[in-house]
Length: 574
Image (cartoon, rainbow, N blue to C red; front, side, top):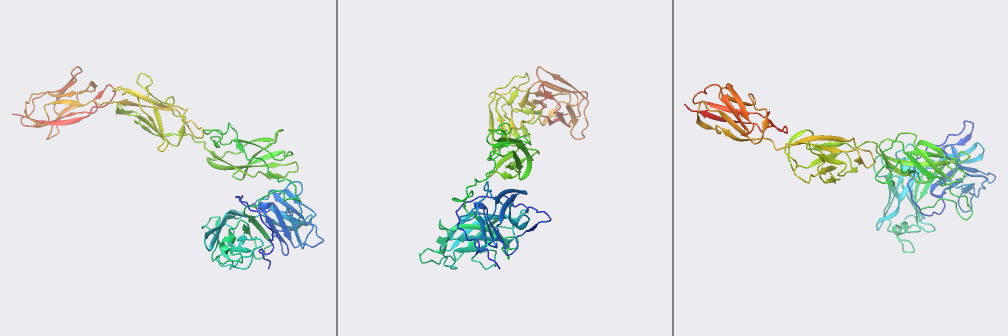
């Protein structure tokens, strides 16, 4: 059985980066004889960080062609390669070179090795990364971290994953080799590699017992984290027992043409898309927040002969546009984007129909929902509001554009009342604080204008609400007095009210027998000057009897504020 530990023999330069999810391998014509996965005795190893491919198992007379395909299109070709010891390599010292451009090899890219037009081997680039190189935890423990994503999403099978620390031209005391390897638990390697949790695609490789030292006195733990050592994450193929297809991610390795022999420029693709100023509706033209569901993006292509640029949002094709004469592009999303965060990328297409993706992405936030007022104080149409009360509005989300012109208070005559306006970002409450005491018993109107908007620029629906200031009228004097005794059986009952009111009459001012609840026949009058309501019984009250007078909240002042209703009792004499 082959060992992937033996054939990836190349030195590595160090780099990092997060990669996209794997694509499904490109299909080949039914008449082709292309093995997918790669068939023994051939081995295809991809080094995406260095845009390099190595293929083994070829006869001296073979002249293989290696292709890189993305989305079914060939984006990189190296032809007429000469095997050395059965191995052909592209973009590595002593090997062949990419023709025209050096493809930026990424996860999901298909690697095809042909010995005839439709005869050969095929694999795809595994989505494995190293996010943290070998790091010393204590005197004898080293960890490495990374990601591993299957072609359909989720975790790669554990037996397809391996991590390595490589110490070029040196040997670890632990095993006498130049590598420390970590595999799934139980595999019997130097260390173990496990996912960080169920369903998580992040992993951690751990090596322990690295206290042994070499002849130079350097411990294995120190050797593992030395600047000359390399950290690698590896996909061992769909059948890891055969090891015929391997992807090796090298932390810190640099892409592009391998000097000095290879000079084809790296196919960088277009610049990262940028929201146009008109589409970037947030608080600035650079915050990448928009209220437009189908925004427009701009950028520039990398290659002078690019003809078209394709836009992708969250990996989904979302429009295309021709390249302008000055090399720029402008694309409006062909589909409405849901509210939330999105990742935007672009790819440029040359005359041969080959698409080269850009190397970066843009994160944007789409927010098409206008803010709303969730609470108002004083409440809509409320009465008896304090004359020194503030006016507040609580919003559903952070807002901008708040001020004395967009949040106003007017009196019953329509005049604006001077009042500073403040905003509490934590509670999302806007407060209007009148400079003067509000007039009593008057209707006031608060207004919020559409000039108030959220951080994406969505305006609120302009709205107003009214309330009435107090104070509410109260009874300031009563006759007979509360719990008075020996009250004349022919006496009137009176209530003096704090301000002028309306609604005083039979029913709103009443007298009843306290024991039976029977209503006494009476007549009610009101003196607007003295503000005294008088209840005059039409009959002589019964002797030694307790009566209860009641005055109703249906009595109101000029502003509509209700009287503070009450009842009181007294007892007649003989």
